Every structure is written in structure tokens, then in C-alpha cells.
Image 1 (cartoon, one colour):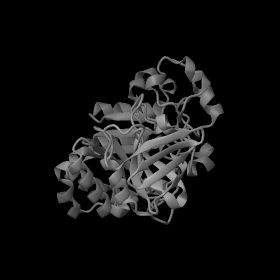
Image 2 (cartoon, one colour):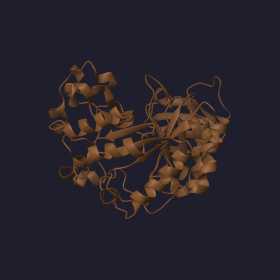
Image 3 (spheres, helix red, strand yellow):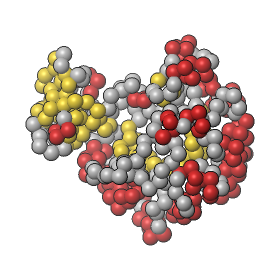
Image 4 (cartoon, one colour):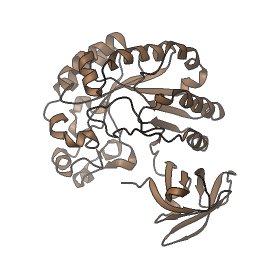
Length: 363
């Protein structure tokens, strides 16, 4: 597992964002350049003074955009630089949320620390042609600040794109005009929908009336011509009703950019209820297959996230995306024999090793 938070020491008194450089060639004024490296770590100098990052390699950090928090003695790697592949970079804008999903992988907190300016600074330093994720919590609890950040970054950096995870319940008719601006052509909204039945959806997200608000929010997004990706986490509660949801998406929401059916993470709330919530798709893929068939028959681009390739029937394998972020992805020893490993999602770092090893059938 790749460490995104590292111990550090800094001359600064307040948090700031900088990009780490191994050499002084072609640096931005906000960059910090390597001045020393030894077995204990690497030290950089920039306009905020010296930063010492412990137990870190300058080669590994080169080009990373980091948030330095002097008071906490930490450096957070916000945007990791491209090296052998394109890493997934996601900015966490808040840990507050107005839902309490049964399987939430990152249980919400009541507190919020406003980092929008720092995250804006980071996004403006992103590598060319980057796709940056935005997540929470629920980002649109701070809708005004979120949209302002998106607009500023995409105006100054027309080469970038954002993917925003949101329950879409805080959009209103008054937002349509703003969301019609051309910068939003480069924003995709990842919106969860867990069931066609309002009561079942509301039960899964732990909020009465959530389905109704979701429909209103989707109407705003689609009415503004926004790009929308629907997301459905597979659970024992909704798996039997997946085909019904597929019919609803194909009938009412067929103009979405994609519908992603996602396997469960063994973390957060799901960890305590794994046996109750997890659907063993390796034993029975029929409900998933029926939903995918219906979606594609009606022109909906449906895909699979977090499904290792060898656990998916051959006819549907091309729909399984390498969706797990590289910093939290693992492969078990049996995967070393697989010829398709490079395009496989693998497993989440926290997936039980025994279950993963018993599921793998190298291709």
C-alpha cells in the first residue's frame, strides 16, 4: 500500500501547497527543490522555507504536489506525479455527509476543515491533461465553494478535467444556468443510485426521502447537460433487484454517460457486516449479467468496477475496468501467473487475503 501521508518538519507556520522537484530545472515559483537526501529522508527548499520529509525517497516524490501541514508534522501527497502509469488522484474536500450508507467505506465525521483554497492551489499545479477526482463526505454540502473551485481551476487550466462524487441531492433549479457554463463540459458527476424502489434506496443510504431528492438533483444535472456517471454498489439488499434498476436506468436515465456496478469494499461500515452484505458474484453472476444485458440492449454504457477479471464470466470480462486506485490496490501471489494482470483492477488492499486467493483463477 502506498503511503499518502508522511511525517515531516517545516519552517512554515501555516499550511501550504507546493510541488516537489528533484532538480532546479524549469521550476514554478511555488515549487520546492531538493537540497539534501540521506537515509532519514529528503529535504527541500522553497519560498515557504525548508521542508524535511522523513523516511521518503526524492525519486519517489519527484513531481508530487503536496499539502504541508506544519502544525501536524505531516505532508499529504495530494497529486502524485505520473511515472510508469497514470495514478488516480482524488482530492477529499470534506468528511461531512448527510447520508449514513450501510456500506460506507469512509464513515462521515461531524467536523469540517475548509481546505478549498489549498485544494485549488494544488489542482492548478496538476500535470497536463490530468483527471482529478473530488470526493467526501458529500462535496455539495459546500456547493458554492466547490463550484467556485471547479470554475477557477478549469478556467485557468483548460487541459484538466474533474470527476466529482456526489449524492446530487443539493442541486436546485437555480443551479441550472451556472452548470450550463462551458467549463462543466469537463466535469463528470459520479452519482450513487442503489435501487429503483425508493424505500430500498433510502434504507441503504440511511436517509428518508433520499431517492426523491436524488431524482430532483439528477433532473438538474441532466437538464443542464452535465455529464453523469451512475454508481451502484452491489449488496445483498439490492442484488436481487438489479435488473429492475437496469430497466429504470434504461427508461428514465438512458442519457447518462455510464452506469458503474461496483463490488463492495471490505472497509468502513462494510467491514463489520461483510458476511451480511457481500454478494459472491463468483458463485452467481446471473443478476449482474441480466442487468448488464438490459442496459446495453437499450444503449446504456454499463461497466463493472472492483471486479477482478478472472472472477467475471468471459462474455462480460471486457466490461470490467481497472478501477481500484493504485495506492490501495493489491494482487495476491496467484496473480503473478496471470497474463491479464496489467489491465485488471486487482483487489482492495484491505480485502481478506484468504478470500482473494481462493477467488483467483489466473488467465
